[in-house]
Image 1 (cartoon, rainbow, N blue to C red):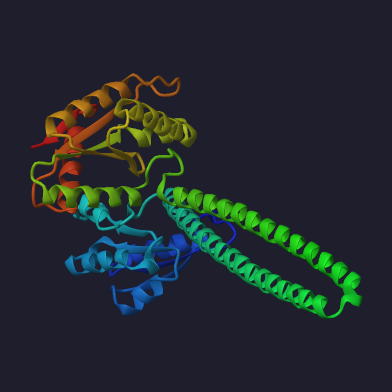
Image 2 (cartoon, rainbow, N blue to C red):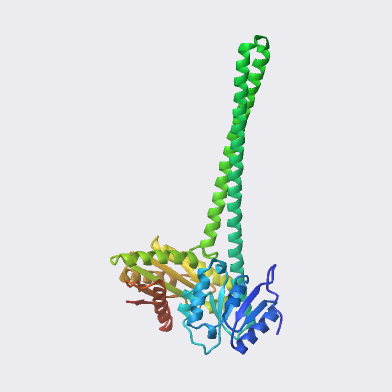
Length: 392
């Protein structure tokens, strides 16, 4: 097998679990060719979970993803130590599993093996790159917070010192004034000292004012940097709309709200770019990226401020529509479909999307809601693509 020198700066590490020799063997072969440092386990146990906290990517055989393992994966996603670590399921052609359920509990990708080693390594590389970007953002936020705290501490100490010096100077002036009554012969000297101390006080007041102004400017600058860092952590780097993590926050909030008020409508639209893999393979990833950004721009123009729009992953997108009935959501999805159909690209014959629509049912949780809209979208794709199908 040829070598794939694809890593940047630091060779990544992977923790793999597989009870199948053919799957484990394929990963070992690819790891050797790609210089990917991999550690293997036969099952998901405490040693595997502890090792996973310090790796760049976790690979799990689909065969080892039973009901107990799903609970383990859900537990992993609830622990901050695993926040940015991508979890990828490995499957063979005949494996049977629920894709939408896996994605809803926090699995980042599903890769069929054995397959093209170059594609496999490229997908691993993409997940590792996103993980390192997330780590860098968290480090930046931590450093900015430390810098802000340091600045506030310095200003506090400076103000205390300035107040102490000012009080001392005023005490000296008072002492000199008392001595003036007793020793008239030292009047000239006392007046000169008094003037000098007044000048020192004015200089000190100017220094204090400068320190306060500097601290305000620095605090505003740090706050701006923190705001920008938080924005990067909640938006998709390519399309500049919400990412999956931020979308989950809004979904949880709106589902909780709908669960408390039966009169409040809530709908969800999920859509997927038709034949997107073919666009990437035939025209290149630059064209594929342009298509994703143009679709995003088009959908935003149709939404006109309605709903919460996010890139769900790859070529899949989500739109959450509070206060929208199923009928209104279907109309909105149809408008989106028609608008996408009008996109012109000299490299792609036609750009279309398949849409699934679902309305929230009282009492259901987020996972059930997501699974239903995912199923309707796949029905749209399987029944011919470029259409809207809804779930009552």
